[in-house]
Image 1 (cartoon, rainbow, N blue to C red):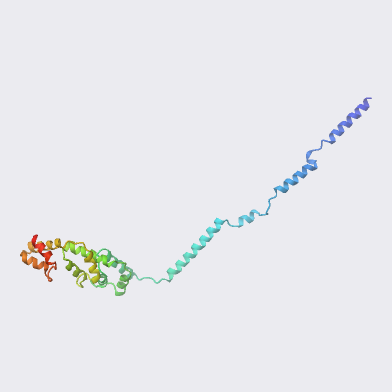
Image 2: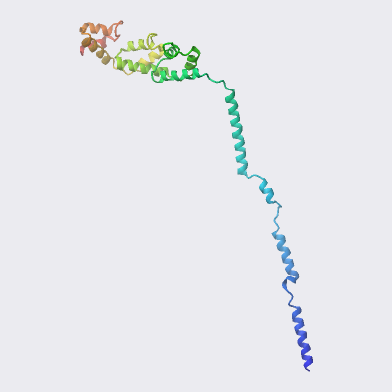
Length: 235
């Protein structure tokens, strides 16, 4: 009786241990593992090595920019090498000419003669001509500046200023440049005539009639008769 019960008990235990196999021995577990491996494999087959060897768009753009800059620098260097060198005397003459124009407001002819004169700058003719050709001067403006000086400082008449600007013994401007100057000069010629009259009357002790004659004479100050009359009337 007891033996039969023990045998049944052993059979039950044996059946139970048969159904408790570890999960990694189950077929479905390995099926899941295989599926996960397939999913995990990257598509396209691009390796890190290939990616590293190809420059980024930014790097490629920088490389092209460097190459272009280098090419331009080489071109500029070749151009400078091919350009003829300007003699130092030419450069110095141009610098002097610029000073005479900008500071002293001289005419083209006046600057040229000053540059070449032995008592002036002493440049040779080629250097002086180079300076004149490359000088960016407004000679109308220079003539007007000179005219203003003659009116304000020396109290000259309109005709006197015109002749002084265009004369070869004066400023040597062209007739057109001198005319531009007097046409655009804002001067009070009555006031100029009176200043001249006071000089003749007080300093040289001339009579009023002599002062009037000196002011209006072509050999004198060249004021108009009306300007001369205004001057003696207001002495």
